Length: 149
Image (tube, rainbow, N blue to C red; front, side, top):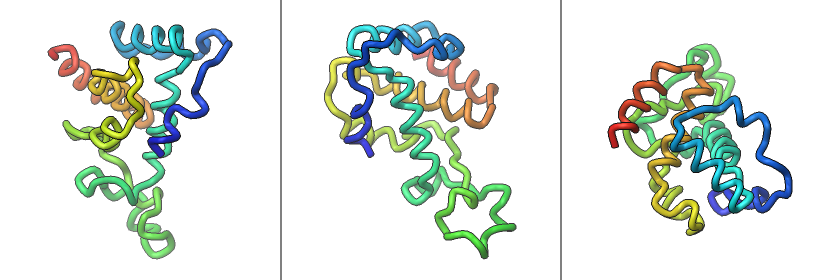
């Protein structure tokens, strides 16, 4: 999955996607995403969104502490495979290693726009997960901690 992270997201002649104007995390993160796109033609937000989406649909690779029974667990436990996304929810609110970022970052291609940006990647992933779950409170709490760093 990691090796495919940047494939398909290479140089593009198109302008920065218009839908992104509706996404605002922080000025710092937004600037990094926009500058990366302008300089390298890679939409980091889209790459991380795709990664988070794929990761969220693969419960068998989640660490145990991130895996919680979904509201459908009792209803479908006898009908679904044990690793079905329907049975599990991903608890992204832990304070470390969201989406297995430690391994992800360690194995990620060493591109200049990613070097030293692990905290940015984590913040974008947290934003995406909080957006998936419509949890603005969790994002605001994370953002307060992010801004202290």
